[in-house]
Every structure is written in C-alpha cells, then in structure tokens.
Length: 437
Image 1 (cartoon, rainbow, N blue to C red):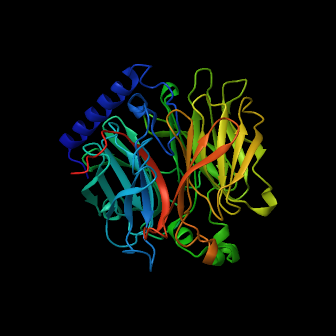
Image 2 (spheres, rainbow, N blue to C red; image 1 turned 45 degrees about the vertical axis):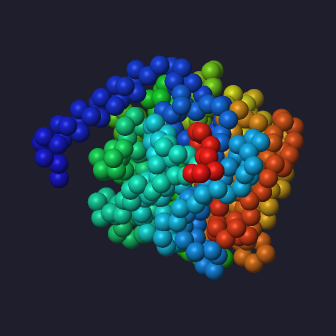
C-alpha cells in the first residue's frame, strides 16, 4: 500500500508525464516510415534512416544449441561483409517462453519478456547496437502484481506499460496492465475490465495520442497458451477460454471508456496515425477477420468486421499485422498456412486482398523497415504451438518490397545456426562495430 507521500509523488510524476505527452511537438508524433511490431508512437521522432541491426528475441529449444532463450543480433547494413549474418547473441538462461519486446521511450533500452516464468530482461541496445548488453532482470512480476505472462511492452514518456496475459491465482485469462518507470519499478496496476461487457482478457496495446485513446485486445491465459496446440484444439472447454473483446480507454485517466465485442481473439492492433486517418484495425485469430475500430456518424467509436483473411473455415490463424506509414496497406501473416497477405486499406471500410506469398511452413511476425522498402518475417508463434517435425521451420527471412513483389534478400536458419525459435523483432541503428571490438 502506498504511503501518502509516495501517492502524492506518483500522482505528480504521472501528471507531469502526461502533461509532456500532451505538449509534445506534433512532428514528434508524426507517423513513422515503418511499422515495427508493437511500437509506441512516443518514439516516432527517434525512428529514421536505414536500420542497421535486427534484434530477434528467440525461444530456446531443447536439443538446439545451448537450449536457452536469447537476444540475437543480425547485421542488416547494406554492403556490410556480415550483411544477413548473426553477429552477436546473449543467452539469458533457461526456456521461459520468450515472446515480445519493447523499447523505452528513448529507444536506448529494450525490455523483453517471457510468458512462462514471467521474467523481464532489460537490454542496453543504445550504447552499442551491434552488441547489446543485459543490464537488468525483473523476476518478481507475479509477486508484486498478481499478474503473469508479460506480453506487450509499450513505451510512455518515462514509463513502460506492460500488458499481462494471465494471473497468478488460477492461470486463467483475467489479467491486467502494469505500469513501470524506466528504472523497472512498478508504479501502478490496472485490472482489465470485467464490467460493461468486459471479459478481463488482455493482449496488445495501441495508443492514439491525438485522441487521448488507448485500445487493448484479448487472447487467452497461461493454461491455454502453454498447452500443446493439438491438445488445445481437441479440448472443447479450453477453446471457450479465449478473449472476445477490445477495450477503448481514456489514456490519461487509464480508465475504460467502452468495451467492444470482437469475437475470435483479436490480437495485434494498429492505429492509422497518418494525416486524415483516424481509425484502428485488428485481426482475429480464431475467426480470421479484419475488424475496424472507427467513429460512426455520431462520433461514437464502434468495432465491426470488414474483411475475411483467407478462408476462415480453414482456420489460417492470423497472427501478426503491419500497417504502412500512409495507412493505405496492411500486411497480415497467417501462421497455419505460412502465408503473408497484403490488404489495400485505401477504403478501410472495405479492405481488399491484393497480394499473397508463402513465406514458409509457418510464419508469425512481420516488420517493415523505416522506409517501407524491406519486410522481415520470423517463424515461431509459441513453443507448444509451433509445427512439428520437418514443418517446424525456424527462420528470419528478409525481403525487398518494390510495391508489387517481395524479393528475397537473405535467410537466417535459426536451427542450422543453433539458435532456437525466432520470434519478435526490433530495429536498431548506430555505428557498426570495428573488427577489434
């Protein structure tokens, strides 16, 4: 329980952060020229130029290399002698279901979480982006908050907002948000709503600063996401335990404003922050649909399905999505068939699929470069959900995109390299290391 002085200090710090949030130069919050998965708009002014390194948060795999979760660094500098090669990795010990990452608001530090043991690792990627260093491990999330499964890491000014997937009590889907300061101290916890149609589930975070709005989506709890995929599909009770809502929040107050019914586990959310665009889009994993969140004629925010993704009856399992800087197109990956699909969003009310390409036996994450000319894909979804045998391909694949066709640049085979399962990606830039370093 906070003392009065701590409470006063917390309120002052929060008010200051959000005052600064409201006073930021509009140019700083202008849309970036890329969509790194799960990125916060509060870093937009720092995103520019050619990405030089790709940081990949990687799940350790039994019998592969040192079997540990690790942060893997790949050189993507044009013309570099090590272009497309692994140049650095840091093993963090054990296999705790490495999943997502997020930068602090200055992009100097990268927070990376594990969904099983709830550990959060903080890497310094600013001092030497080609050779990150582990500088802090947070291992008391469950004890301090009651939540488990740290999933999305989303930068606020001076803060890190973390969406958990589950809870310590019953490992179900009822969960909450945790606000840290950048030093790694818990400042506040916010339960996901159970009233007003809320199901208490969480997954992704997406913020529209101009509207003072935050959207969250919903997935499932520890009991489900740690279960073998084949077993899960056959368990009728377990299959009922998936989220079916999105929550619209007052960002500054951190209070729910509305709960939308979005059946089928809405996952990644992308706000269209380009000039003239004022809507968000998500994909539902179990029903294979794109849902649009947009104001109606009475300026009330609504969510509704606007397009199918592939053939829903075949359950292609949409996973990651990536929106273009001008909000006119959207990459959608479907895990089950290993496809990426490009949708034309010129009319967000009626998205149209205009391009498809098979990336591999399975595909999960997608990120576009800052200039939109390169697209990167990774393979792993969850350790117990990835395919088995020969179809358990684990890779990072890089492509050039000319607006019409994806053309392969390079592939890193994570099994061949003894690295494990490639999951989340982030871009870093900085002076390349000299051979002596």
